[in-house]
Length: 431
Ligand code: AMP
Ligand code: GLY
Image 1: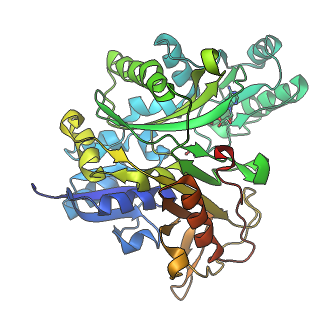
Image 2: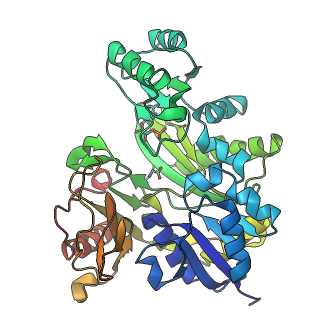
Image 3: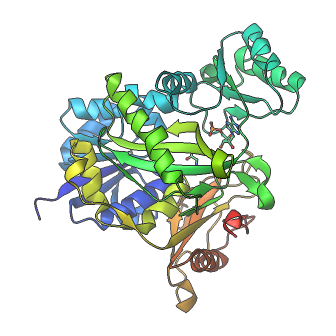
């Protein structure tokens, strides 16, 4: 074993807790740091108060701590070029620079990129004026799909059922600044019926490793009812029709990586392929709904616990541009993650600072399960309290899907805080 590399993870949610957890088991990683982290991460890494978007601050923190690898969790620092600043300073980064991050930071860039490289995606129009929106809506049928071009924290996609409402949304975005600058340009696209699937590939820009396919549950309530959220649970692996992963590789991933290279964009990090599985049997296909340039939340909490192999080594190899020499990352078993949210979420009007009970429950019923912290903070006396909308994930792992689900829900049933809510049907589509 060579020298260990000190690593810093940027971010402070459940995804970052899962990343820190996976890196903490690596023989290639030395000291682990996280900024800004959370109380769960604090048990595995030294945490630092710092805004992950503060490129100068991140570089100087790395210098002070002899950090040789930075894993960037959220999209905002990627889009604003923190990976570029790190590479310029001679520090390895896992995550694309600003040019690659446009795959997530601009929907119109992503759609045009897919068109240029023949990657399957819904037909679309890019609209800068209300007249362009009218024309794009006129040639489509409900439900209409309207997307703000820029980053909107998951609030930038609208699926109105009627044309009047659709035009109202376009007006609100383009003219009334409903989502600020993110909504000054819109993508209007065809509705794709099908089932959604998330696939992560880690890459050095050329070689790649696919991770287990997963599925997020975006609606707030059971039966996929209620408003959209940042994600109320996920599981992996999803049982996909035969040939799906080969299709994802050949029709989406390879042309994406080839396209990035052809456009002179060096991409080292993870590509999140948000896919729609369309048709069935001989008409089965995959189509890209969105790219993200980071791991998904909460999918990561279900995907990383399945990995066998040294995740830290693979991440370092991606950042070094040298993944082909790194061993395969195999997965085994199943994992399921259930998110507990604050009462009132996904609205903004929820209470914070509520004590959380049962985080460290022990006993035979707790085997094969654990908790990742998201919106968790500390109260005045240092006690663990809620601090956000999505508070924590209970994760169960097991040989089978049923075992993983049983364990995740046993773990969740030991936890409580005032007005907590969670879905009881995560993984229903696997039945
Ligand atoms: P996005 O942020 O682009 O992933 O969109 C958010 C959600 O809207 C997706 O997860 C889908 O559920 C839905 N969605 C987006 N685009 C389409 C589409 N073209 N057809 C059907 N559903 C879509
Ligand atoms: N789970 C959806 C996302 O991370 O964008």
